[in-house]
Image (tube, rainbow, N blue to C red; front, side, top):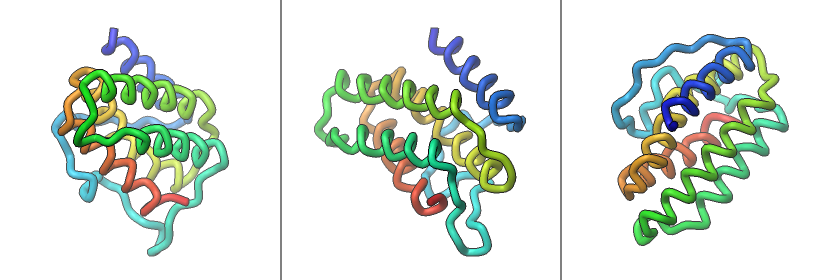
Length: 141
């Protein structure tokens, strides 16, 4: 089932946003090294309101759990909510241009991290998701 949802998300992300981004990023990545993610001439990329609100929702919801002491069930529930938030983000995507391209660089690392957490409920996977959520506001506003 998870493979089906991931495939649907990738198709929606690819065609719903009008941008094709392939990826073979299946290994754990450190948040500081999101492949291809750069600033806009030293400034953060401007997001549309929909994208900004979606990420505020994800960060707000995920920050309510204490990753280091959370149970597997709490981490799985948090991952389920993040996946729902991602579906809403993808469904409403209207961004274009360079900021949109940079968002895709970010999502190529973020989406698989959320998927791994949804499968494992593991603290290490949750820590990666938390790191990636912390990266977003460093590159986007």
